[in-house]
Length: 142
Image: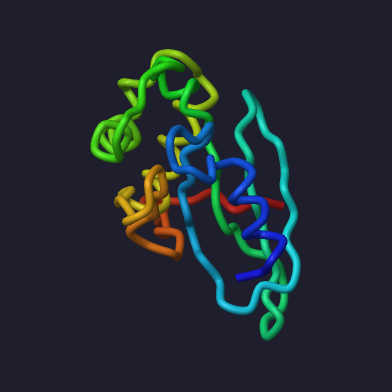
């Protein structure tokens, strides 16, 4: 992993592992990451896209969601099981609509969110998007 990316993870997660500000959802970890871009989306959600040295183009690396957006209180110290239940059931997210929409989109594309060994780190079940096939008759566009 890139040193800059490791430094970024240390900043958003507390080094003493007591209470990180963000829950990290890894979509595709990547092996030889040359460069990455951090995009701030609605309600302080961070989206990281990365570029590998041996492949062309950019890919979605991870999302970083503030724990406050999931409806968890600031002073509580939730474990991975509590957060995982909320991430896999986006209907329970009532604090923030943008987070709810993002989690519904992630679950639609990558099927499920699984827990990692580190505290507040998660990954998706699939790295590739699930294709949505169109059925029925399609009108031709001009």
